[in-house]
Length: 330
Ligand SMILES: [Fe+2]
Image (cartoon, rainbow, N blue to C red; front, side):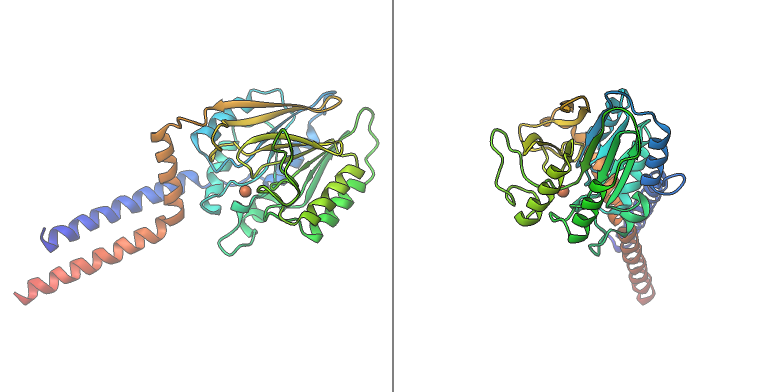
């Protein structure tokens, strides 16, 4: 193949990649009206009235906008729910994916409270993009008798600052309200792995690695008589109960699931002991290959599109320069 033809082909490729990337950026750029996702959820929660037996929906490890995540959101939108809890791991390919997630989440007519996962870090290991868009990490929201505590365990650890926050959030006197009281603590890495029929020892099994910190967390939630702990990180559905505090782990929101499990969300009904139901929306085996490929291309374009276009443009320029020099030399 002649140098001129290679140069023309590279130029065409540059235009194709550049235009595709531009379109992907344009169509997936999405922010939150009125500030951060937490602020928006707080406003919606404040306007809602908490029913006698509130229904909460839990989803985790969803990635940004896979076909399975969208199927989950469509099914969740039809639920008679009060709010949605997201246990983290959205930006597997970096914070640029958050726009796709926020667009997909518009299908949900409920407040959405989220904690970050280990895959929600910036390239430098921090959480600046998460904090800017989602509104921080250790947070609390409360309406009537329902208190939601968002605890940062993203890095398979729980810091001293986060344990202090949890202690204060659990001790805070509730506002006067008639009826039952519930406290739900949402985190990414669970304090232990339920792994029915027998839980794993603290610190073992893709959980908070520091067994001592996990023990302190469990002591706090037990002493405060927390209603329920919700977590993700493990790409399965598992339920446990330790010292009277139930734990539900749901990591099948849309990224991938472990063999034998399916893509799902969880319906939690707070009535006496919480009623916890796994709602399967897509089989774990037999993902739609084309849809998965399309999702991967968009995600990869968001991650590397700028660099790829620049590199291709540089190679194209070089090739045309070589060709011109060769023609002049003849
Ligand atoms: Fe994770």
